[in-house]
Length: 285
Image (cartoon, rainbow, N blue to C red; front, side, top):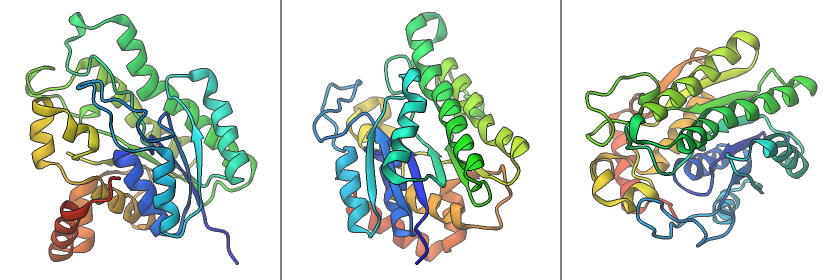
């Protein structure tokens, strides 16, 4: 019996990370789930002070209901001294990692702040969480698959953002995003590009989810109201990532907009049916 491939998803307690983990379980993967929120009720939305639903354990339960094995590993993307150790804990739990999904980002003060009004500490935290930590985790993953002779068939998905490529029409606080967020996501975007140069046998693709109505977005009120109204449920992005990972026709090092890709992949009728079903009962708890 062939072993199921193992995918490591960062930031898997809720939102896009949780949805990707569930979709990969449905497509035949076992999962290693990392994040800070291990149990329900311990995560707070910094914008509102409200407790957010979601945890590694509840994601693991959802994965297992879909036939996958799930391993939970507590990890904080701001703790750079723990990146290699946390990856070793992932290997100890699952035995191997074949797919790395770099999804987690730093969520905290300063995303809607002009550079001159922000604090140096926030700059460091955002660059640490959005760029430095994913680079170090990618390094650990690459060393693992190269040392074990499994580079062929290994894959990296980078959950990226328009902010890493596009200049907004307005500044932060007036419809745009902050300079620090844009700079950190631009650097993150290049991880995939450069992996394919250094290790062409490893598949690496950037996925732009577009607007997504995650638990945090839905709880954040007027500041993210437009995203909450127009964003798709996270499960749509999970389904897109699973399809992208399985699509042999996508060029290595590619940049894929998840929502239009999935519409093309499924066809308009099936995509709209999926969207309606997701909005009616998206698996977010």
